[in-house]
Image (cartoon, rainbow, N blue to C red; front, side, top):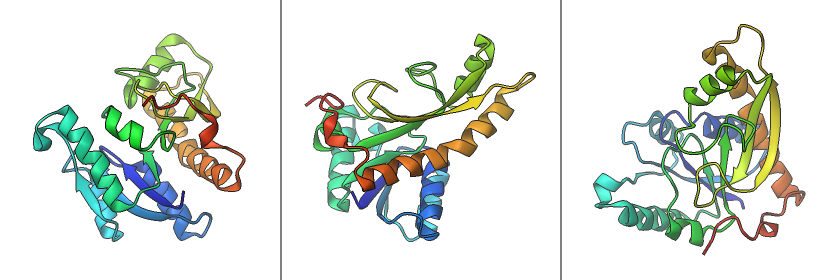
Length: 206
């Protein structure tokens, strides 16, 4: 799993953290590709600055969802990706890509799944919902990606307290601080064999 591709719609904070960890020699991997559905994504600009190949794949450019799915899968294959990490990627992964990368697509979500996940639960909406619910604890989750949003098997979680008087913005910042380290921890556990991705047989239906 040394050849990793990233999917990011906007800033790609998790991707940036992992690339910085790689630069610090905390983990070894080859970043082979960064893909976005958004041609103006800062993640793409950052990848280009780092000399990482990039691609833009979306339904408008490809002529539909099925075509975009096939184009994404082909871009990942041509890039030599062995594992795919989502970093704020806002599109559902299609069946062609899920099948080709069965149990090799990971996502990080800013809550303790299954709470505050699913359609519409992304970005600031998650933190707004956590505060509105009166929860005392939230956090971040790394999970395998399947055909439903925020649904695949959980690989690791970390808790973050919801403090009195928290705003969604303050809560988001504190959750963001733990997301990168959690992603890195999961990758290290996979590398050491402490997490066996092949053990999750139902993560991505064929």
